Amino acid sequence: QVHLVESGGGSVQAGGSLRLSCAASVSTYSRKCMAWFRQAPGKEREGVAAINWGLGVTYYSGSVKGRFTIPQDNTGQAVYLQMHNLKPEDTAMYYCAARPGSSCGVSGIEFPYWGQGTQVTVSS
Image 1: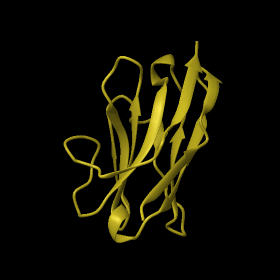
Image 2 (image 1 turned 180 degrees about the vertical axis):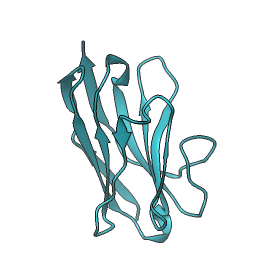
Image 3 (image 1 turned 180 degrees about the horizontal axis):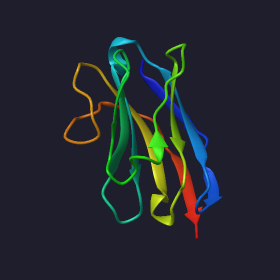
């Protein structure tokens, strides 16, 4: 059974930092690639960061590169989204996603497993 649970969202002022967590109760096979997506009201869902779990290769969207990182924990049971220098345009619901297989990235790839999301609000 696949189960992803996000936590760590909240409200922060512009320039601040937040760390989101995704607890992954999925098989190693099912979470070869882990990613964070976000969706703001009235906007399309956007992939912001992804990691190939086995290789440690990371991917970032242009809008967050240099500000966000996607570290994984040593137990292999969680992945994080470390966000720095937050901007009001980062306000969105953030979702953790997982997929099996070697393909990984923040766009053009289907993710079959999703968490329920955690809200991030950045005020100016």
